[in-house]
Each structure stands twice: as structure tokens, then as C-alpha cells.
Length: 364
Image: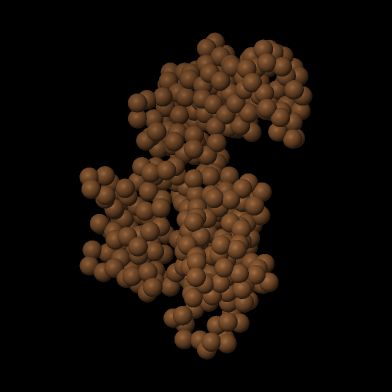
């Protein structure tokens, strides 16, 4: 799939602004971004539900949308799974799945067998005669998944399919979606605002911010080398500490934070004297037994604590700001003074300017 210069406006608001990306056959792409970032609009343009105002979309080299041509959804060889299930209330689970085969010119028996096989694939073989109102939310979403894959489309679109489910069911269905979607060998575009869901599912992540594609990369690169401060913030932050670069040393910036030194990777053309914001990943923080302050530690005071099963996460005020999710196997009482260890590999310094969220750089 090739997207070139995709633009979409609603009245005077530009929802998609010159989006360009390629998706290789069989890849699992996640569109990640907050509400209003344009991810659902882009998926609806791929599906043919919305028309582009500019640019083009090609499937396997065939133009499906540009200034002159717009193929309707039924001619694009795709299926879509919605967050609200979108099942026909008057059809049984088997009927809903079989409905997707109505254009496949199969015999009634062949269509029934394929629909039954699809229900079996999602673990609902014994519930085919039930209507949507007789199924739980998770069961309805699995029917929607079976309906999407039964016709073996070339493209599967998922629009936040897990957002209406409870946490435990969400995790189990996420695994099922990943397995079934990849077994189908279809190209997958999956929309979510949940960064943990995106990292768990994706071969590649496309991060959208106010209609702009700000980073396209594998999950590991998005997390370890976020292209902008916005990407870094959106994909997980324990906090931000303002400071000034004292020196560049071995690929790391040595940053002065209210009289303390921290080491961090850095993005953009930065040097000694640059004013920066150091974004700290949650996994980069922990409580140290050694109270000595080094260039990988800050003093702090606990202001809140939460039990997380494997241990405790503390909210700690430090010079320059507050760090959340500081982990320790022990519970530190509110008001306790401690030393927070900060792993330089989990910190990135970005230029501290008015346009900081739009600044794009390469993490050294």
C-alpha cells in the first residue's frame, strides 16, 4: 500500500497534512496518536469511507483514491473491525460472519462451512446460533473479527477494537487479533491511542500528531529513539527535567539540572550551553541503596506511592521536577527522602524551545 501526499480537510481544519508512507504486504502497521491526531480519518480514507482532498492511495500499484478516482469500500478487497462491533442485530453470529461472503459467489453450503470455520478460529464455534444481544462484548468483538477474516481480504483495518473491553479481556483478545491477523497474511492497519497496545502488536508504528506523520519506525526504534518530544511524551514518560547542557561526552549530553548533573542521549543539533528538557522513561528510574549522588542519580522526596503487584511505584519530587513510577520492591512512606537512580540510556534531551514538540532530530 502506498500513500502519497494524503490531505483531508473538515471545513477549515486540516485533519491530514501531506501524509506519505508505504506498507509492505503482510505487515502489521499501527497508527498511534491521541484523539484528534488524524489516525481514524486516515483509516477511513484507506477504507474508502472518506474521500481525500489531495494526494493518492494505491493498493498493489492500483490507484484506489486520488483527485479523479475513488473506489468504494466494496471494491477495495478489505475488511474493517470497529470498536462498537457493528454487527447486524437481526442476524445470528453465523449469519453476521457469512454476510461478508455474499459477494464471493460461493454455494450456500460452502459459505456456511467457511463461516463456521471462522467462528471456530475465534473460539465461538458453539455460539453460532446466538444473536448479538445474547453475546458479551468480547464475544461480539470476536464475531466481528471472524467476519473480517472470513472473506480473506488483502487489507484488514482495526479501529480501536479493544477500547470498549475490560483490561483482562483486552489483553486476551489482543493476542487473538495478532495471531489471526498474521495467519491471514493480510496487510493490517490498526488504530489505537494506547502505546502499550501499539508496541505489543506492531511491526511498524506510524505516530500521528495533529494530522502530521511525525515518526514511522519499528516499535523498538520509536521507544528508544523518539523523533520528537511529542513522540517521547506520548510513548511513556516518568517526567521531564529542565536543564542546560554542560558538555557532550561519548554520545551523551551532560546536563546541569539545578546544580546536579545528569547524562542523557540527545536529539537535534545540541551542544554545550543549549537549554534542554530531559525526558525520563519510567523504566529508567529506580530507588538506589547507595545515597551518594552521581551523574546518574538525583535526591528526592516521596509524595505518593502505589502498589503494583511486583513492587511499589513512587512519585518523587526531585530538583527540576517530579518523577512518577519510580520503582522499588520496598514501600517508601510519603515524605521519605531517598536517591533516585536514573539510567542515561532511558533519558533523552530535547531543545527547550517554544516549538519543541515540532522539532525533529536524530537520537545520537
